[in-house]
Length: 110
Image 1 (cartoon, rainbow, N blue to C red):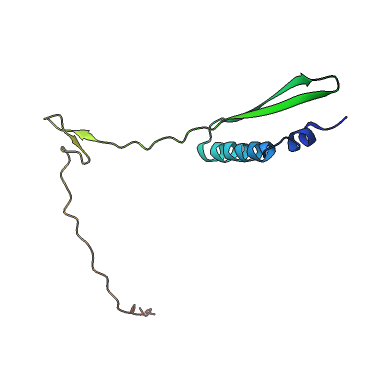
Image 2 (spheres, rainbow, N blue to C red):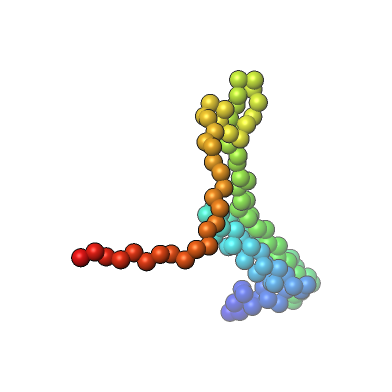
């Protein structure tokens, strides 16, 4: 009995390579998103005269979608969306200048 993978490899127009690429895409997306995906392969077989058949395989990939990032906004008294909480005072932060001096050695007493 001939293996199904061998039959799929014999399909015309790079169908096997396309299915392989789709499988790879599904696996990568599942690994990244941690969500379920699938690859469904449908194989149709139809008669073609007395001693032959037509074989057609169609692969359908369900690739999990990556979630879109969400942003947090605060709402002020006027209904405006703000990135900073208007009820929380801003800290007086400032940049610290870089000091390029060698460290001093500290001796031990005793």
